[in-house]
Length: 116
View 1: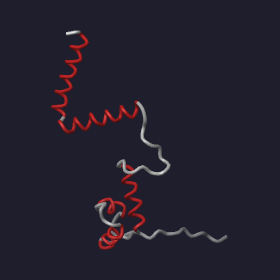
View 2: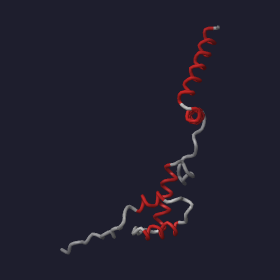
View 3: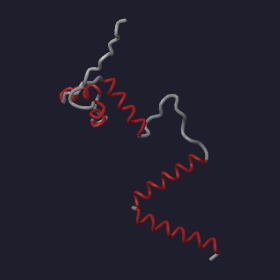
């Protein structure tokens, strides 16, 4: 019985192509990224550039992919939108100022509930 040879992958010298692509500006054309990689000794195709950039965009909430569900609807969407808005405000104001404002709101709510 003849033994089957495994197809060997050509090793890329110089580093990880995906990491290199992620480190490049997304404004560069795929061909320019390939050329820059070649100068660094990293060999890959323009297709890999598109794949890596697509995965990065998907993780970062980029354009919706075909076959994926659309945005949430109803209360779940409103809650997550409000939560995100709150988080943005906390970052914008700073945690200390946000806590102070939240304490003021809580005191006001407690006063309303007590009828005072």
